[in-house]
Image 1 (spheres, rainbow, N blue to C red):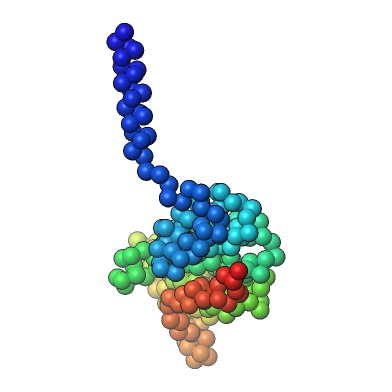
Image 2: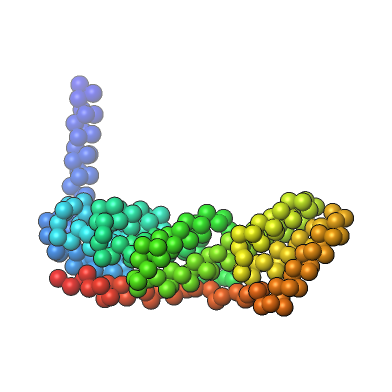
Length: 271
């Protein structure tokens, strides 16, 4: 009898909980209503709300008239909300399910931006830091994403900006190698430092880091009691300076205008 009473009490409690559950305000919304509200949230910078609407639109109307726009919109919303892995995944889905779509170049470009900004959080936006000291994995993938834009869509609106970002990334990757070489120098691993610096010279020519690499090679070979190799590095450095082969760092890129103006550019918002 006591077990029956406890069972009835439990059922009554669960029923009471379900009574107080909040009803989904979007229940019964049409796909056009969901899409319109999502776009409105996007316009107001309410990225979380926009993502929620787009996710519901995709799940309820996966083959609806707004499906392809929602897939690309949600990728951008994820990107602006700092959810870079989700942004890349959404862009990948769009590319997979909509090959040869006019917006494919933008999807690749957005993938590149997502990796480009992967390690930039609230603090690094306002506190100066050297991004070349962070894990280069995201930079390498971003470089490849932008390279895809150049290779597949050489005449797209995103080609020039992708090229500039690739230059910035290449310089950053070279600087990362320099940081590693300097670390080896501090630890007394002079052979490793010289090899790392040589890697920069062989793989990142015409970057600002070439000068640093040659200096490190000279220092490392001096420590290793290899004066001839040290002099060779100094001579090459002098030749590069005289010929103008040593290049300056480009300005850091933080321009998001191409992304924000995308919908106006190709008119996907027009119904």
